[in-house]
Length: 409
Image (cartoon, rainbow, N blue to C red):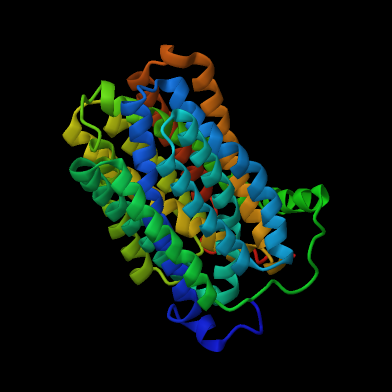
């Protein structure tokens, strides 16, 4: 934690860290309103098949992977505040590109900009949280961050679907652009705290150091494998979901966004529980792996019965699982890793997850329209639940309190 940070920022979720949470929530609100429409337009307006929706995933993943690695180093030696501000500006630009475009190419370009933007935002936000919040409050702070994200998912998806039905895609994009500008303004209220101590040079050696830190810690290594491998299956679901809604559930355009809102509402309730009842934890690896397993169960419930009502149940289970996975994961990294390396280690996690997502998108693209959509989702859900179960079993073997060995030097 930065010794020069304002005392109020270090002990309370009000003040500077509140602006970080607000920026995260507003950017997420704009993202879920507009990006759901991007998938809807691809699947319905442009009649995209699995190969075309896979390109949307690839367009996002490639800049996200390489950008998050490099920008994780920049965060550790520059300003996480201004890095986040640049990322939020990029999200607004992505909305503008989708709004102005009339082809699949414009949607791909928008996804590319989202990837670049998220690559800046993710390590910067993680670093800022660790600098502004004391160790004992990290789980709670990240849970409030998750609440802002999941409220945005619920409201952005629900609102985006309603506006899409009533007024069309252009109005959704216009509203989303207006909201997307606000997080940039929020960042001006955040102090320019920066990591202290020796910082890495901007080189591949620094990237290796971040990867080495993650791999040499047994619990970070477990989570790296479970969340990294699991993301290939999660990404497969996201790529095929709009086609599943169109061809298997036989629902109209806005149905996809309404399903996303069910995910968000369930996640909000879970995040509130984490924020209000969990102050600190030494068992985050167990919680995270249980979350991965629950996401897999949710995907199975969503896809196997092929019923619209049960798809809402599956989406809700996924929302709970994601909330059990991400806030504890960020809190664990922030507590387990030395201040000067948090950005790099977070970037390693993000990059591995997106690399596995990219791999799954490339496989879907290579197979094209021969991909059996429902069978792929059902199998993916079962495999993800099994992967999470293996992680739970490994994490449970550790005695209580052993999940944290102290910050890596």
